[in-house]
Structures are given as C-alpha cells and as structure tokens.
Amino acid sequence: MIFLEKIIDKESFFEIIAKRRSIRVFSNDPVPKADLERILAAATFAPSGTNSQPWHFVVVKTESIRKKMAAAVEAKMDEILTWPETADKVRRINAYRRSFTFFGDAPVVIAVLGKDHQTIVRKTIESHGVVQSRNRPSSAHLSVAAAIQNLLLFASVLGYGTCWMTGPLIAAQEIEEILGVEEPWYLSSVVPLGRPAEHPVIRSRKGLDKVVTWMP
Ligand SMILES: Cc1cc2nc3c(=O)[nH]c(=O)nc-3n(C[C@H](O)[C@H](O)[C@H](O)COP(=O)(O)O)c2cc1C
Image (tube, rainbow, N blue to C red; front, side, top):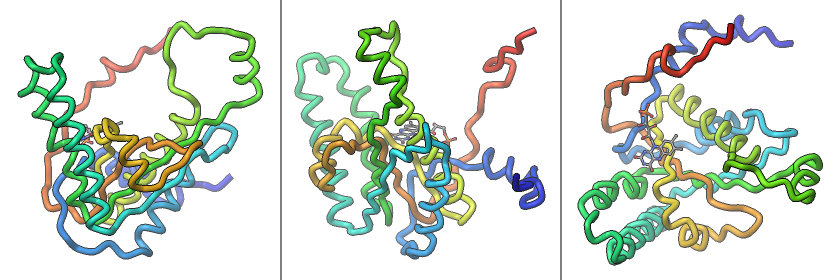
C-alpha cells in the first residue's frame, strides 16, 4: 500500500476538490501536449468495473472541427425549436443554447467516449430475462464518469479550467460522425479545456444533513 497521506497535504487535496469550478470562458492560450498527456493519464487512473477501462479520449484542438461540433449542437437546437411541442417553451429552451455550445470557443475540446462492458454475471442476469424495475447507470457509465472527474481535478491542479458537458449530446450522433466515432464507442461527454478567462464563485452545495443518512 502506498501511503498517499505522505504525498500530499490532506487539506490541500480537499481544497483542490472543493475549489474546482466549471469554467465556460477560456483564453486563447495554447495548451501544451505535455500538460494534456498528464491530465489524460490522471483520467486513466480512475477505477473502472473489473478494470475494463471503457473510455477513450478524442482531443480536438483544430478550430474548424471544434466549431463544426458546436454548429451541430446549434443546428439541433434550431431543429428542436421547430417542433410543435416546443412552441410554448422557446424562451426556456433557448436559455440553454450558450451552455450547450460554448465549448467550441475553448482551445481544446476533449470528447470522452465510453463503451459498454458487462461482466458474465450481468450478461447472465439479462439473458435470464430479469427486467430491472428502474433505469440504473451501467458500470461503464460510472467508470467513464470517474475518469472525467479525475481529468477535471488534475486539469485544475495544472491551472486549467474545464466544464463537464452533456448538453452537446443533443447532437451526439452528428458529433460522432464529425469525429469518426464508431461502434462500440459512443460519445459520453464533452469537456472543453483551457486557461480560465472567468473566475466564478464557488456554487453552494447541499449540507451533509441533506445528503447523508447515518444508519444507526
Ligand atoms: C454530467 C454533467 C453534465 C453537465 N453538463 C453541462 C452542460 O452541458 N453545460 C454546462 O454549462 N454545464 C454542464 N455541467 C456543469 C454543471 O452545471 C456544474 O458542474 C454545476 O452547476 C456545479 O458547478 P461547479 O462545477 O462549478 O461546481 C455538467 C455537469 C455534469 C456533472
């Protein structure tokens, strides 16, 4: 066992976690490949179901590709707004537009891909016809999420801003086509990355009294 408490001061590590913020405005400063490699390496040290590591990272620096991805999300927004069921929600839906598309302006966009992975136990349960009463996230989804969180945290240690984004997934198929993503891979999230050009305050969090149940 490696004694992690000797590597980093505990309070500093807590601060790294507590002070990370989603960043939505970036400077144009280029991001050196060496930094991206460290950040992506941190992502790959996340835990994953049976160590399946069901993730892949597509790093997009080219402006024309970033813009094409964001334009696909814009176009999907426009399409949604033509649907009859959105007629009375135009303003509310449009309010999401920027928070789904700003990633196109970041110097780097990381498209995080996932792929399903099932243990023999899960496969057996499914083939037995057991229907789960509720939708639960798959082990693969959870593993990819853990990798993304590692990525965000280590990026913030290196002074980069990031934002975990699933809004762009309204155009998931179009983005997959732009990036040449093929099955079994699917687009899980989009993470813009760059030097922050905004310094938002820490958003409040629910207190432990609201989110923890201590069993007697
Ligand atoms: C799974 C997930 C999806 C998210 N998708 C978006 C998004 O599409 N656009 C956006 O602006 N922020 C997105 N966010 C960022 C959240 O809005 C943000 O994490 C939350 O408001 C808390 O703020 P903080 O990250 O600064 O602490 C997403 C976060 C998560 C975890």
